[in-house]
Length: 426
Image (cartoon, rainbow, N blue to C red; front, top):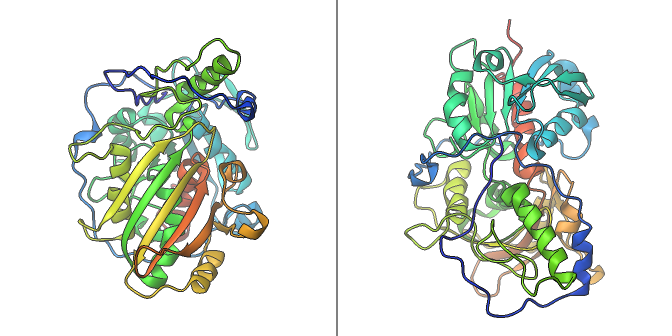
């Protein structure tokens, strides 16, 4: 079920100036386009999670073990010790679903049987996997309930309709949902495993956070444990692929048309304005407080994941930029205690899922180019902020399809195996 996120306003502004043409942008046209962000999608109805006011929970945060990042060998013990599971993926033919399957394979997750569910269009197709050739099944709730764990890589409307039915009762499956449908619902854990894996104990439905939040908190959490977070201001620079395949296509085709001299300014249907040779400070719908929903997701989800107060101060400005994949974030974090850069560097170097890339003298710092395809997020440009007391400023990059979606979901399942929340049905 394909999710198509429209960021375009009802009234489209016509750019008054021609876009600047940079020859360096020629490389953008050569980008291999991503698969559809989600495998299959019903029509979006008028019911919207955007209208809901999230209620953060103050559940205790218990640090979990350092989960493996890039090296599949580091989770081999989990694979060998856990009973084989029947694993289902809904939306497995889309980009997120494909990455979930890739993570299951590379991390040697204990898959006994892999079942892939799709629409009538996908049903019957065969998919080659490390676990053997799998025939795509037409999705049915009863079939999904036969699994031990089901990963949902579908849109929020589909999740709202089916997720709770799939996991209902003692004989239901554990469901890990990648949509925004249940992120703010009380009693449903919103999980970044390196931060709050223990909140999954005894739960059957788990929400995966927004990609921007997950990437940023991987760097913020070790510093919060060290110095005590007081406030946070974030600015994001998000790739076109965050808007799905239509957004990616619009960027590539628009860039080609401008460079070929066919247009002075690219056409725009998905984004509020042309994205090639431009940046757009607008992702998702504007809210009454002047923030966009994408920006408020960072505020709401940071509070819930980190167990902070409902009014804890977090502010975000989200910007769409003309890159292919991997989101970037500039973060200013203010702390209760005096900050020490050396101690902060050490904490980040030791943090699971984090790669410190901070050597400006040798031009080494986080970039989408180097973060794409990587399990670890990159953090660098670490320094004391000179505008605020007890504040650090740093730059983060992470692959939003991996750390921000598929990888996070699979590591959630690994954590649930370890704490007993996920096991093979008797």
